[in-house]
Structure formats: structure tokens, C-alpha cells
Amino acid sequence: MPLDPSASPAEPETQTSAAELEQLEATLTLSRERIEEMRAEIAAMEGDAAQQNAALIAAGQRVKLAEIEITDIEDRLSDLIVRELEVRGRLDGADAEIANVLAALQRISLNPPPALVVDPDDALGSARGAMLIASIVPQLRERADAVALDLKALTDIKAAALAEEETLKANHQVLEEEQLRIATLIAARRQGIAQLNTDLTTEEAEALALAERAATLRELVTALSERAAAGAETAPAADPDVPQLSPEAIQMAFADTARNQPAIPFSLARGYLTQPANGNIAMAYGANDGRGGISQGQSILTRAEAQVLAPADGWVLYRGPYLNYGQIVILNTGDGYTALLAGLETITADIGQFVQMGTPIGTMGSRTSGRTVTTSAGNTQPTLYIELRQNNEPIDPSGWWADNEQTG
Image 1 (cartoon, rainbow, N blue to C red):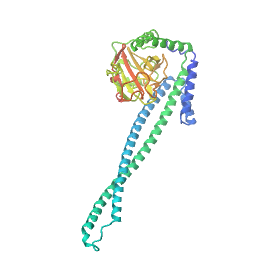
Image 2 (image 1 turned 135 degrees about the horizontal axis):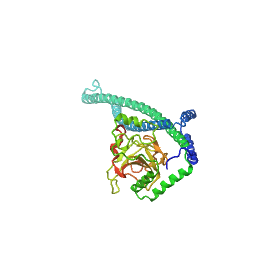
Image 3 (image 1 turned 180 degrees about the horizontal axis):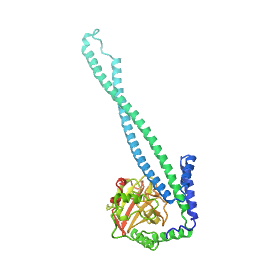
Image 4 (image 1 turned 30 degrees about the horizontal axis):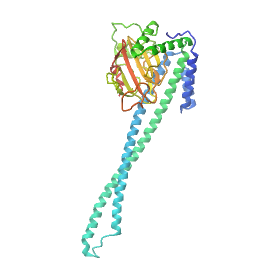
């Protein structure tokens, strides 16, 4: 059932959003002044759904960029730690070599060869001592130069690490601020959704009942699609003669933040979709899934608590737990296509809601939730499973992402 703009707000949903928002604010390091400024910015958008959508998508993109930068910085810091250990290892080795050389010199000083003027018969011993000293001095100079270079390298590494840590801190601050902005915008959106509580309860109860009865994803998608077709939260029927659009026209369509249905027919969106999360591909479409089957989607290893974005425009057919997939979201993207995201920890989109591509719709947990992927990471790293279907048949999602959205 679609959202009814003439009904009253769903009180429990609003209360839950407010409580979640207060809990999030309590964990942040942002100043109270900055939090109040952000609240005022968002309050000024009240009633302007297009502006709220634009702000939400922009915040989601900033979080995505901050997550990428944080991962890159953490990788560079790891490299610096390895380099520091290597340099310290060489310095420790140099200490041992220099100690051996100094011990040899000390032995010579304690038992020096006799002077030629005193004992001409011991000329051979004197020559050996002189040769030993002559050979030791260049070695000492060479080692001293090497030690000096290593000490400089160690100083440079420490300076680089401090700079990276400052950049990391700045990106974490951006992440905190944008996560709060997203949570505040979502709370504002939910307050602005006029829907009877009974409507919301019925909507979710029906979807959960379908999920409990469906033994496979195919059955679930079929049941949800049939249910959506009986309501209004679906796109117009697919046009067999879809007109081709120029890249400029497609970009302009996606730029319309006031839209309440897909910007373009999904069949034209190939190469334009937003990657829902940053990460590395752990399993590609068509690969052996490690359980005797073939993967019907993509599995991505993400950061802990990574943000998840809507990969395309669409209506939320289902959100919630399903079998051993963890928390899942199924979007009706129109034109006979659906998009499924599984393995989330939290979901902020609501059943029946239309979400625009790039809208934050949830977050990952701190480890794999639901079905695990056979990788060297085991189940210690969160794994997002992505599946695209056309007429309920899985298709390879890899060619659908925008060029700058490729994962891995």
C-alpha cells in the first residue's frame, strides 16, 4: 500500500527515530553548537522533500568519500608501520655490528702492538694492527652513514605518520558529522511522512508474512512483486519501445531530486548505478559460492559499520530479516527489475517508500551477518551481498555500475 500523504504521522516510528538520534548524538565528539547548527539547517528544509532528498544524497556521497579516504589512510599507516619496523630492525643490527667493532678496537687498545722504535723485531705485529685499524675505520664510516640515513628515514616516517593521523582524524570528524546529518534528515523525513500507524503496521506485517512463507529468494521476490502490482508502489509498465536517451539527458533526469518514480527506465540505467558500499569484491557473479552452488550476485567485503546506499531508484518492497541472509532490502526498480541487498545490520528505509539512487538506506555491522562468503577474511569482516534480477532471473550486476563506482 502506498504512503498516504493526507494521514497523520506514525507515532511509534517517529519516537524510535528520535531515540536513535539522541543515542547517536551521545556517541559523537561534535560540539553541541555544531549539532544545533545542523539541526537548524535541516529544520529550514521542512516541507521541501526535494531539498531533503538532495541533502541526504549529498551527505551519503560525502560519507562514501570519507570512508574511501579513511581506508586509504589506514593502508598507508600500515605501510609506514612496516617501514618503521624495517628501519628499527636495521638500526638494531647496526648497533650490534658497531658494538663488535668497538670491542675489537678496545682489545687493540688494551694490548697494542709494540712501537717500531721500541721493538723493531715486532714490525709484523705493528703492521697487522695498522692494517686492522685501516680496515675498520672505513667500515665504521660506512655504518655511520647508513645509520644516519636510517635515522633520517625514521624521522621522516614518524612525520608522515603524524600527518596521516591528522588527516584520519579530520575524515573521522567528517564521517561523524555526515552520519548525524543523515540520521537527522531521516528522522525529519519520517516526521514528514503522513501515514496512519495502522497502515504502516499492516504494510510491514504483510511483507513479513510473505517472507516467512517464501522458501527461496525467487519465491519472495515473486510474492512481493505480485503484491506491489496490486498496489501503487510500482513503476509504469515497461515500454517495449523504450526511447534511447543521451548521457546528458540521463544525468539531468537523475539530477531531479523532486522525482517520486525512477528517473529513467531501468533498462537504460546500465553503467549509471551507484555502488551501494565501498569495498573489495570477495565473490563475483557466477563464481563457486563455496557451498556447492553458483553465486547469483556479487559479495563485497566492506568496512565495519559501512554505509549502504540505494543502488538505483526504486520502491522498497521489503526490509527485514530473511532466512540466513541477515537483514535484507529489496527494491522494485521498475521495468521488471529488482535489486536485493543482504547482510546489513540496520535498515533506515521503510516498506513502500520510494528511494532515489544514492540515498543512504542502512549500515553494515562489525562482522559478517547472515550467509558467509568463503574468503580469507572468514566471517570477521562485514559482507554485503548484491543481486539484480530481471523478471525474477538473476543477472550479472558488474556491468551496471557507473565507471567511477567500480568496486575492488
